[in-house]
Amino acid sequence: MSRILFILLLFLLFDKQTVAQNVTDQQGAVIRTDTLQKNIYLCFTGHDFYEGFEHVLGVLKKHNIKASFFLTGDFVRQHTDLVKINCKRRALYWRSLRQAPLYCDWIKRDSLLHPAEEIKADILHNLQALENLGISPKYFMPPYEWYNKKVVDITNELNQITVNFSPGTLSNADYTTPEMPNYISNTDILKSIFEYEASFGMNGFHLLIHPGTNPLRKDKLYFHLDEIVTQLKEKGYRFDMF
Image (cartoon, rainbow, N blue to C red; front, side, top):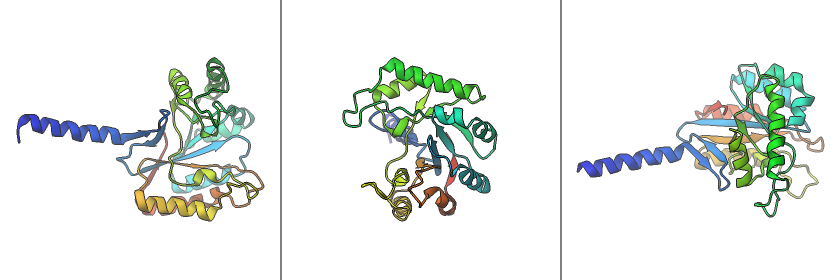
């Protein structure tokens, strides 16, 4: 093999490895982290409902694993003690922040619903709420997991990395209630998770679960967290945070 061909081969192998590390979507958000490692990143979001937080924390402690929590500024201010106490547990860290207002249009995704400076000020205001508790977030999951390139650029300016859940499973639909046309049961959600893993693997997967949901939804996915973690651990996965 010639020296030039050998160098080219090394370059191609290195480039493939580099691309495999993180997967980003068309808007620039990271939707999968370090695909070369058999790690799964549990993501929990909090705003209106939080009745399942203690159960979730108990499961994380039982398995001695970490997770990332994305909380709205309102949640942080209304549940200061909960945030302060649990950010010091070894099992997890409250590293990230999530806002409540919808930033861009559902249909015309490129259109911001608020001026860029207003969005920036909103994020800064809530970053300060966490800083006051001694927490310095590095990652940001936009409200309703909906955003565009402009929102990602704004968060980049604030030294925040925009992340979102990995597509492929139905876990993010655990907020739906029976009267909604898009309602999905826990049976179907769990099936989607394990079938996806069996077919494609979940290295670096961001698995989103809501630790609090509308009372109208009686089947709470977070009650299946122990089952999810146990089965995925048996397949050799570890759990990490951003």
